[in-house]
Image 1 (cartoon, rainbow, N blue to C red):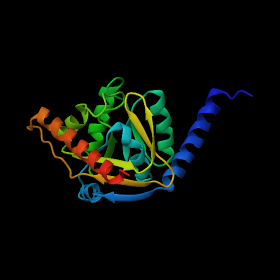
Image 2 (spheres, rainbow, N blue to C red):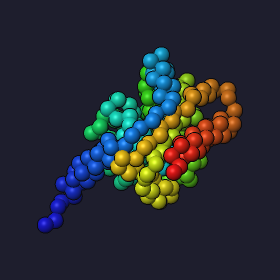
Image 3 (tube, rainbow, N blue to C red):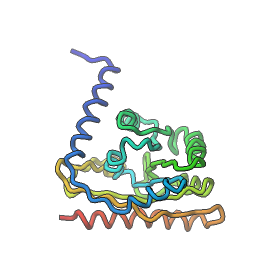
Image 4 (cartoon, rainbow, N blue to C red):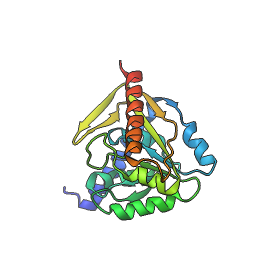
Length: 216
């Protein structure tokens, strides 16, 4: 029996989302630095939370049901994760560097001008190159005064799905490390290229640290 496209898509969302949440429910978490985002939001500051694309899923599940925003592309894979995300309490800005980027950037800026807003981004997404940040996050921080908080995560046991980068998915019952780094501030007068280097180094350093903590 053939399923029509709409029903098949709904099944992918329901079954895929349920399985992912079940896997992550079985994980044991150690979280460090979460106070960086909690204190910023409590003080009325807005936050751009950034993680490399390949590591996004763990943080995406961990921060569910908080009403946070996430920047998502418009391609097929992004559509699936967006539909799953809506079911677990995320709100979305749709667009990328390759499609609807200007509109998405302006929407993100307007949101970040409001107090206590968090926008979750992958600065090397949606198509890479891996671990090379694009300019949007830093430009948004400069325009709005939002704090840029780097993050990373890794599990002791995981699957890796390789396309233009390696997308990591925790296996059941893994121990998972999540680290949030100190906030980075970039005003409009800061050297932009130096800011991108500082941003990349912060993300890479956290990734190395969580890797070291979960290396068996």
